[in-house]
Image (tube, rainbow, N blue to C red; front, side, top):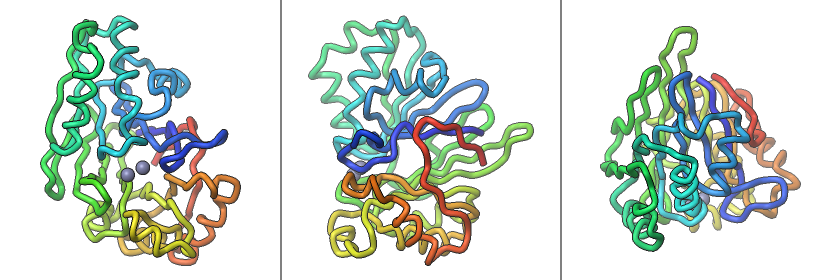
Amino acid sequence: MPFQFFGTAGAVPSPTRDNTALVFYSQDEAVLVDCSGSPYQKILKAGLDPMRVSSLIVTHRHVDHVYGIPSLAHNMGLAGRRTTLHVYALAETMEILRGFLDLFPLEEKMPYRFELHEVPGKEGHEVHRAKGFRIFSTPVKHGAPNIGLRVEFDSPGERGVVVYSSDTSPCPSLVALARGADILIHEATFPHSDAARAASDGHTTGYQAGEVARQAGVKRLFLCHFSADLHGRVDELRQEAMRAFSGPVEIPEELREYRV
Ligand SMILES: [Zn+2]
Ligand SMILES: [Zn+2]
């Protein structure tokens, strides 16, 4: 099952990297994970049909993961969407989503429903099941309640597991979620020389992302959510991760299709 990064930056984007968000898709549907930038345009740039987007999973309430939601909801409506868009989030994140719907008169204008589904903060919860894939969540360790995601693909000719950490310090629940995955997408906001700051901000260093990959026994590691001052030298984070993890470590390109 293919996926793409709509962005790979941390909270502050740069000319080369936008805020971290992802899309996972099959023949039948696409699922967005977090919502920043100009999401409708990103869907088009990814070569996907916006009407094929069935759902959006919002990992946590921080601005860089949610600010595109009013724009996405508005654009989908103006583009003539009629089918329900399912939105999944923790209760603490849901408050922000309801706030958006109150702040803008979105629901009046939308010819479709924006259906909110609360995700319980428990390990291994099945968030979404579609033809060809299932998505599970687990709580991770960050400044706001947050979830990591495990996407399991099982369709003819395409089997595999991709895990996304979202924003987190290294944590055992994520190691458990990532166990044996084909690809672990782990945040690496800071270099290891900033380990103290990473810990206090609820983030991970490049080296620590490598340790998580090794502990979870994954096949490949992708890094993301890079602090803006590192965008010119992200390969240093990759080199750090490779000191802890012997498998391939990649710095993903935005809007490029990846497969397990
Ligand atoms: Zn973030
Ligand atoms: Zn965050």
